[in-house]
Length: 253
Length: 308
Ligand SMILES: Nc1ncnc2c1ncn2[C@@H]1O[C@H](COP(=O)(O)OP(=O)(O)O)[C@@H](O)[C@H]1O
Ligand SMILES: [Mg+2]
Image (cartoon, rainbow over all chains, first blue to last red):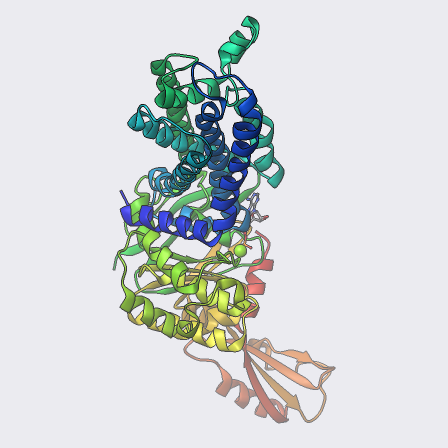
């Protein structure tokens, strides 16, 4: 494997992130903090506890997840789409690298960024509500797996998109609704029976539930199932990226 | 000498069904400068992009230093550098960073001394910390050349290197190419400016409509296809060629004021001495005499226009 190439791509991508630190880190942290202020403190104080956890604290894992998912997708898809759009991607295609190096470099950097954002939001949340973290390593595992999985998904989106519109439409039309309906702001058990069943078709329910379990040990679905679905999603994305590079789909004519 | 690039029956049909390359066969020797000449749309960029891994071949094979460009792409791409026809560069990175990035991408560990020497040779050292967005078009092209050479390739492709380039850069570029040649680097350049090929290349290939129609050493090409013409300005106009001069296949031009003799430079005897003697005998007198040789350009136009 060409480790130099992984390092080169990773560094270049991280440098790009620090060039645009306001947009890539401060903006998502700020907008998530607003959620804490509005839902956690202002409205949350009038909402009853959920499974023994105050509402403000209950939404923290969901909010971190929501941020991670949208940021991962948009950062990673942009990182691939932009050089394709401007033509600079030719250099990566002509380099002695396979999809493994490209993926580790681009996706690794985007996932690092997501993990940084997730951690900052977690720290910030502590200023607003008191949070327990029952299983820090499980939480970290979910954070890393989900960051990578969604960065891979973003990578695929960035390769598939042939216009800026497609790039922005998927996060807005697919991911946003699924996170909102995935139990970020409520427990699935609060829904009527039929909607509970429908909710279980939403894969994001499992990811958010698993992450929340690592905080408060309460979950909508079993932690094992959550982990299995997270890993499954990651594997599917990996296979898709592999296929993209093997066939040259949309990146080699 | 072993071939650094060997292309066998390489064919490319684009997704739309257009066949841009038709069973190309070509061998490039280590250390030579090869000019690929052809009109716009001939398939030059397609050919280069396939070798470099940017475009997938449809059928056939190519080997860089004996390594198959598809199944052994790591080994083949590692020694190839490309200066593309377009000017795509990461606008917000600095010159030095983007050149170091290229070196890393090709698997080489950092070598600040080499990179400094490279940037100096391209007059980029003063600009090493400038962001690329601040550079002129000519400077951007220098950056692309530096990127292509950052990993010390053995085979360098220059795709239309001097299209829209100022004289100074052109000169710098040829200096770089000459010094690369000294170091044993093979250079393949495409162009539709014939002077470039005429100046620099050891061998010339002509591609048209996706087919290589000719590959030859430049000197030989000029010699074999290069016809020389001798024009005699006559003192008295002629209405027809006088008898006794048939064997020279002369032509009258400029309403009989000029006599044109065409001969080939690859023949041992040009026949000029005999012709002059014969003219004397026939009583044809002339006031002046000029000779001209066809340029590569004329040869090229001639070849490309020739029906397939
Ligand atoms: N991505 C593509 N899809 C379809 N046709 C293409 C593509 N790229 C190039 N072509 C066509 O292939 C032919 C050769 O193009 P190219 O290799 O760029 O020629 P050159 O570099 O000699 O000017 C042209 O007719 C061009 O229109
Ligand atoms: Mg071209």
